[in-house]
Length: 252
Image 1 (cartoon, rainbow, N blue to C red):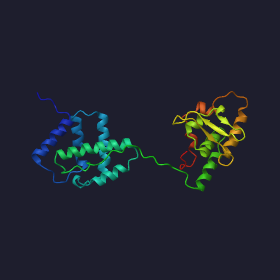
Image 2 (cartoon, helix red, strand yellow; image 1 turned 60 degrees about the vertical axis):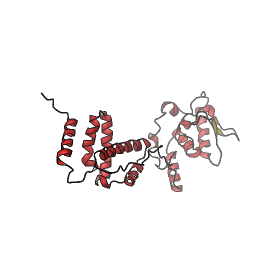
Image 3 (cartoon, helix red, strand yellow; image 1 turned 90 degrees about the horizontal axis):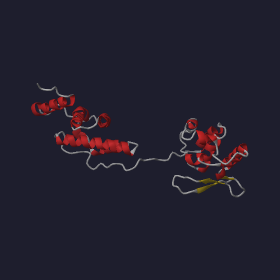
Image 4 (spheres, rainbow, N blue to C red; image 1 turned 120 degrees about the vertical axis):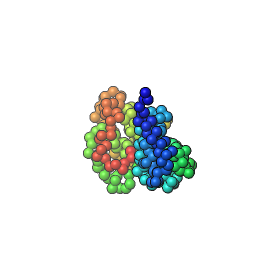
């Protein structure tokens, strides 16, 4: 007794029958019209379910972007579509999906040339700075920071005036703060590049930071050397919530 065909096998069987008996469809093929048949082909080759979902998602998005017949899809169109992708990993995955699909279409004579030839994988994610645009933004940022009490105001002011990284500011210890006359600075012991440095403080560029540091150290009194704030000890990694009221344009 013959065993019933699986869904993917049945789809491929009908697809082969359609190609051999019925010939080419009257309507021109598109990415959308061939998507199910291509995913069934991948399933038959043993691709995992997660991979099939990724291919279907990427090609489904491409089908929306390119509803025209396959023969009218050009390399420049695909290149422009991929350029809008923000991350390198997504760019590579979508390009792999397109390459596989169009290679399959070429093998089945739906197209006479592969429009993905010559397209290259983006090697790194494009990350552009988001600087504060003008004086109005700076005023809005300073006004938002001023609404917080210590130590939040101190941390945000340090980021605002010194350009320190978030992790560097949170990692500051009391012993890293030097406010002696003419020696004002912050000792950054574990920066991202692993090269220790001193962030110079001055009355012109970091006036608010110096004032808040003196105020905060005075509140600590004779406390033993340790983290500059309890916030750094107990809330590390969860500092983004207080940033919600801040202007979105600030990158620090």
